[in-house]
Length: 294
Image (cartoon, rainbow, N blue to C red; front, side, top):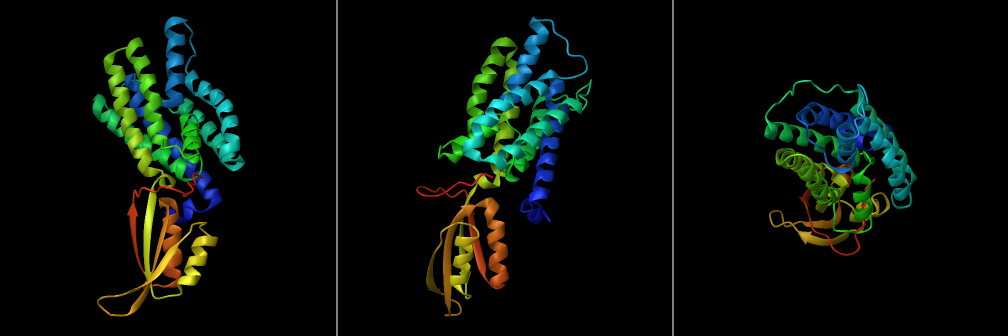
């Protein structure tokens, strides 16, 4: 079911919106009640909201102006990403950003924190936010903000992943929190953001490189054509011998993303139910390897 969701265009958009809901729940239920700040562009919007309330005496009633600011600031970022990431990605991101801003504004913030222990709240909130954001990115969308900038850098071959770029930017953001507020607010906000970034990088399947070895007695030519034509990946194959049976076997080696591996495994087993497949995640790949982030 999860495989079908990730590879069905309509269901992917629904799943992406659900991921935004998870992220908004994590923020409003665990982080905001403790007076902490999320990272990225939303963190900047929260900071601007607090400064406007504290130093300018502005009141926004029952609504959090940070959600509106977040949506407004995403417009120039989406224009920047249009050429690099394409129309389809930008449209899905616009839907996801609008959903996130809406959820953030509508989900009630508890008057009393659900979890009053700062470390536990950061852990729970970070895991949920990372899972939610990871689902959005895996489904080919983005919640906007720094995710888009990070994706553009990754697409252009930068060593920055989305999570690493987020951590770098947030170092400056939380330095501002340290100077404006207290060390406790800054430190626990950093801890929350760290948990979020770590989970995000693992959830974002297109960001995880995988090396697959396929051992099959079937037609290696047909399988190779599928990998090249359907997955758009190159493949190297050679003939081997099974030590236990002494029979010949075809060995195919291909590098791809974790998101693509499910489609590969489905195709291999449809062609040869007895094929043997091994995968190794986190493979370092240098040279001509295209990252597909949508």
